[in-house]
Amino acid sequence: MGCRKMGNRRFDPRRLKSHLQYTVEEIAKALGCHRQTVWQWIKNGMPISDSRRPILVRGIDAKTYLGARYVAKRRKLAPGEMYCLRYRTPRKPAFNAAELIVTTAELGSLQGLCEVCSTVMNVGVSISKWRAAAGSLDVALKLQQGSLDDTSGSRVNLNFERWMQG
Image 1 (cartoon, rainbow, N blue to C red):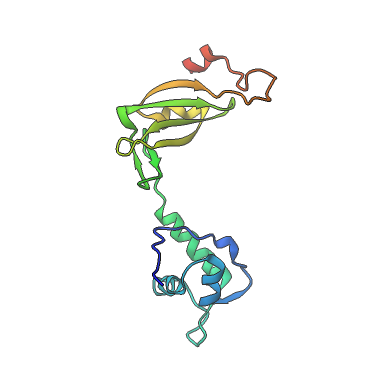
Image 2 (cartoon, helix red, strand yellow; image 1 turned 120 degrees about the vertical axis):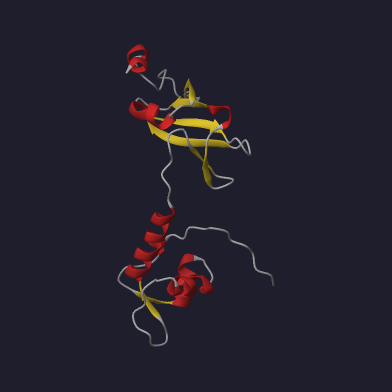
């Protein structure tokens, strides 16, 4: 039976109980990964209870280690960048253009196409701070359409003249 490539997968540490101790096999089963992955984490610095067999890892230590790994991999987007899910990297949108999709009076998203693979990229923004997130992008405004059962009218109630000036 061949093994299947998993890629860079993020494991959910919430599946582990902080107050329990786990064997390597139990951590692997709880997180849905291979036990060799857990051994690699131990080799790379995940703390163990002691050096006796079976190797035991406290749940809180495993949760802290996995959380720190996730934070270390995160990268803040520069102004004008969006995250391409296909290539797993921040990129500028094609044609240096994006749409600001206003969903509520406070929230919206900038949407653009990846310049490499033409995948739709999004980044959530606060309406009051969208200019900083857009950077030098050419931004077109687009209001989100209401759902079919929404009979109350527009979902967005903004004074656009005042909003566009400020």
